[in-house]
Amino acid sequence: MADVTDCVFRQIIAKYGKPDVSWTEFVSADGLAHPKVREKLLIDLKFSKKEHPIVAQIFGSNPDNIQKASALCQKLGFDGVDINMGCPVKKVLNQNSCSALIRTPELAKEIILAAKRGAGDIPVSVKTRIGFNKMEIDTWIPSLLEAEPAILTVHLRTVKEMSKVGAHWETMKEIVNIRDRMKKETLIIGNGDVLDLEDGKRKCAEYGCDGVMLGRAIFGNPWLFSKRSPLKFYTSEGSTQYSGKGAGMENFKGRSFIEKKLKVLVEHTKLFEKLLGKHKNFAIMKKHYKAYANGFEGAKELRVKLMETKNAKEVGEIINDFLKQI
Image (cartoon, rainbow, N blue to C red; front, side, top):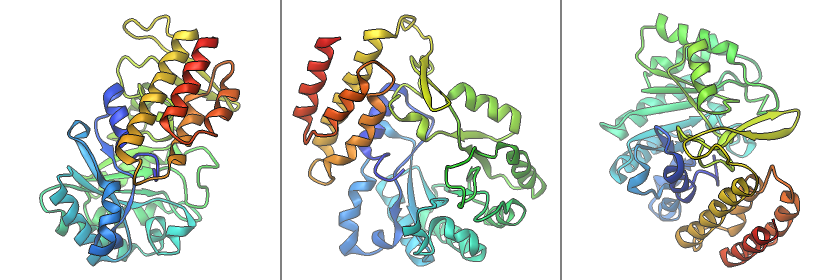
């Protein structure tokens, strides 16, 4: 997720509920392949030891540059390289990158093979969708599997659908069947509308995939991947509810619930300013504030104030004042 899964966000998640594996935000392979541009992009590939295993996510349509970028990622110490073939944003589609590659399956295969040459002994994975304007599982998925990526993560919507409709989990069984019929060892990961770990386990059991990837569910809930997660998010008719139990967390509600979330918000902000303040716009943090400051009385008013902040000091003062009033 661009401007979301930066090193600061991942370090916060690793501290409160470390997932099995993390992905970086996606980075242009064309940029990484050129020394003059590379220096500006390396901040997007910054990571700490506590984040392992971590996969570098790249995108592009030039196989040579994909190979060079993959080699760089291997040299930087990543545990894997992931090729984004699923982003539906028009800006990257115009570069014939990401989900535009669904329209050019032969080029997509060439890109995977190039990444494998560059990555050396670390695995190469792919994330994609089930089609462009319509479902193309029977043609697109086999084409990718022919190149034998280590993992194929499938966001279960078409490019045209963006995230405007529910994920088509009913298609996962066929995707797994295609892999099995082709006798490939590629692991299949499902993505889309996974609420939490329990929901992910249910989906794996029901649809036969090897794992799930969670994205939007992590917003505002750094405990999501913790087995003792004090928060679980369930969305119904546009509203968000909070529940959950864990060791010492039976009464994790009311002021305790609010204080826990907002203290992490401040911690997140301070770490962003420390590690990325010289490189990225502070406004990036504000999408996180919308998630942290949500689901409790006074949250809307708090968000309005946080949207006006310019630094961690201002954020800390606003949160402290809010907590004194509840």
